[in-house]
Length: 323
Length: 288
Image (cartoon, rainbow over the protein chains, first blue to last red):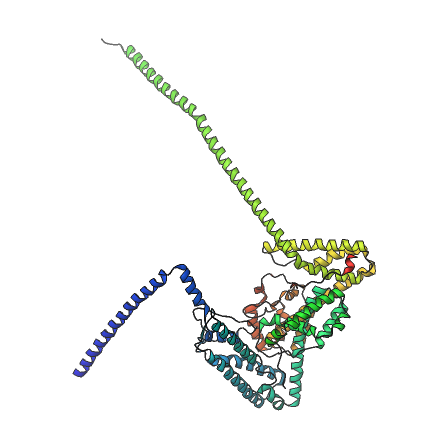
């Protein structure tokens, strides 16, 4: 009992000690903070502006990684300078969980599987096998992206110096590579697509192939329709010219990616893709059906597409074809 | 000395008369003073009323001047904006002229100049209309660039072209309108396919339904030149009754969510036409 009382007394004394220590820390902190604030407030406006500019020029790359990989799929890059903001995928940027990639990739995989299922009416065994392959693809992607993300954990660059700018360029390239990996997750060289012919029966596989072909053609038809609307408004086409140009474009259907992540920002890239395909049509064929002034305007559009080829390829609009 | 009752009565009467006379004199004086005061007060009141009226008149004048100045400024803004917009409408004229050239080859040289002049005037009118609508915050309802341009040019062409030529020109216009409707249908289906991953059978059914129940206002889908709302392309929810019945449960849930986040009402008022700096140069035929 005595011992208990003594211990209680000691504990009570310790608590008071802690409390006083805490109060002291708070008071000292307040004084120090006050000094700090005064120091900042005392700065002349020009110096303060420079300080703020310097702070704005510093970018924590880790915090930018997920946002740029998962939300800027149109090819652009976004930067949040200064104070760090939470990552759109839930992490704080530097300690982004690997789950962020897994979540995005699994959502794509589930959509893909649901779509195959809706066309092929999969059996449970087929679904399990495809899910396993899908999970393998997702894991592989997650590891690749995680390796890139790790490179930027805790890395802060200053845009004002050359080293910082070089690092930012490297960051952009790595992010772009991750985007392409994500876009091509279930391309022809993925495990899911490789096991598909042996998992489905011949009738299912034929149905799946026909469906995919039709979807791809439908998408291309949509892109061509929008481009033709522009040509029509611009060139004053007649019905015969319209039909001929549309036919030539539809004949040259590229390997459009139809199962990548939805990227609404692609509109501009898609229109340039049509211009690129237009540039691949034999000019003599086109010249044969349009007037001189029409050809001049059409050639200008085609050249624009050709000049933007590398940009178009970077948009991930086209699927990698299995070699 | 003793006075008689009669004398006392007379004295009282005289006293009363004197008192009354004094009182009357005082009253009369007061009345006369008041009467003298009245014109002064009236004059003061009249003066105040005149001042107020003057002030009101001045205010009204100032208001009118301010309104005129604002109106003048607005007119200047409209004129400037209209001037700025003219090049944006020029390609529509050049495309229209190209259709005329191809279908109405017998139009004489002097008539061609008149047609071009009528077209240029229409460009100015359209640019002015556009600027007025823009500054008044109005939408595109009733503003149809292609239709207005065609009607103006057609009116200028008709007196100079043969009947067959003019019919061919109008036929091309009808074909063009039909192409726009077809493009709008394709665009709606493509949007749905991109977002909801339709099957071939769904695409066919939706497109057939769109064709069957087509409404002129649905051409608005052509105004969407890559707009993004809440990180989504605008949902063609105006055609819901041709779409929703053909979706499965998963797609219907996605469609509902898409419409909520990026329905067409979020699009605002857009003026959509294709112009990105490229333009068809009029054929030399027009200047022969």
